[in-house]
Image (cartoon, rainbow, N blue to C red):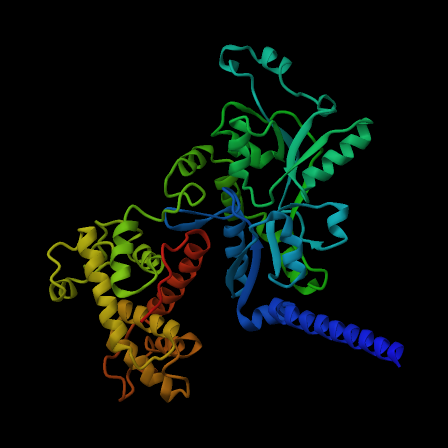
Length: 483
């Protein structure tokens, strides 16, 4: 009997653990989400791209999202007619795991095509070709030396690395190359594994400062980064030319084929070459960016007016990064900016509104931010019938751009069209687009007539898209919530 009870207890415990694991697997599956097909992407009008922070891939500069991968993604998303959502891999070693757990639809990163990676994911056609180079310091007195003397004191061939150590990321193609070289050369090149969250910017800085002895980077990336570190040498080749591409899940055939068709066509265009050259050839612009305090990989700053934005955002209980996104949308942080309609300053306040808000000088950054946020607060209160806080923000922004009464017209039109008058997304935003057409703005219940509906439609979308970029790069000083 005791033996039987023991067997039953073990069986029940095993069953419970199995069920617990199955339940946890289900939870993980639902958290990670269902794999998105191309049809899903087109239906939901959103593509999710996994990438990393770097000075060539994706970064923030003077309030604007930039990067080679980011700009090419934007072009692809626009051609598909979908929104772009960026998913950040803080650890580069997790890119493939994130893709295969459905956290994104593709990896948009300069990924070298390797046989090992091809077992795990599919690749797009190559975006470009590059070869790997060794990043190393020149001798201390290199400026007073002739070129051949410098070459005598640095590594000029991979064979010279036998017995030495090179610092690279664990799952990188560079680590695999070092293993292959060790086998080919009949010796050992030791690998110092550096963290997967270390950016290319940090790698170059650490080699330049002597914290890392050697590392390996793709030549086109090394060429642009070394322009800011003349003490670094990148002339030693570590590989033949390799294909650099984006990664896709093996069940994404339709998306892969669509992307490949688009890349084959667009790689031949002037626009694509301009984007490539901007990030891999224009060394002057690169040096200007990386020395700026408004470069996101340097500091947690968006604009010269961050402190003022934080001050007045806090007064109305808004996330300061959202207010910063509005200010960028209005003036690109130019206090002297004046629109064709006469709106002035950081927050582009119209003369009559400025007078009502007691703003004596709309070009003064503090007055503009104080008045602009006060006006946003008024519009927030006037949209109190919108219960969802995010939707209420969107109605507030649309009112700031087009005027409260035009937005209320759009709500009336939405109700007429059997749309939800208290939901901006895909409802009132679609109604306001129609108010630029006589068939709609002449209806008897429309009180304020014609409005350029595309302006508020894009205004709200652009601000929220930029806000997502700001949240990805810039930490909030204190958690704030809308009232």
